[in-house]
Length: 167
Image (cartoon, rainbow, N blue to C red; front, side):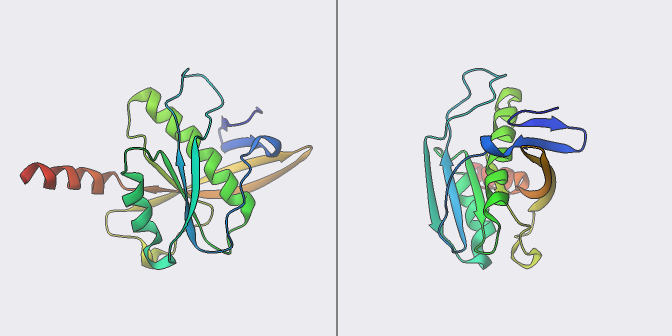
């Protein structure tokens, strides 16, 4: 199975030439994106309208990403640590776009936070979990396996909604 973002039994598969191009600053930070609703549910592409690289210290990076992901115009946040390989952050972005599109079509929470390297467990807030996505990246005939991480924070979103309802 091939393509820009095909899901395989072992995980995701992307063609390296179709991964997003960006060059973050060499610091810990968050790459933010404003993404439109998909025009067609089966569309492979989703244009990024806005991206920015915001410098954030590693010890607050996960919490900050969750807070920023709650802002209405933000659809995707990628944690990029200064030692994370650029390819891993590019793959995390591509998986995040695909996850967001899938969730929009099913009516699920569409806020996605990804990381090109696993966040340090010491800086992950209570109620937040991370899961790994194995991704095969095909560059001509060479296939590389890259692991990216998704940050799950649904419990925090529901708790915040309940707290605001009490006010």
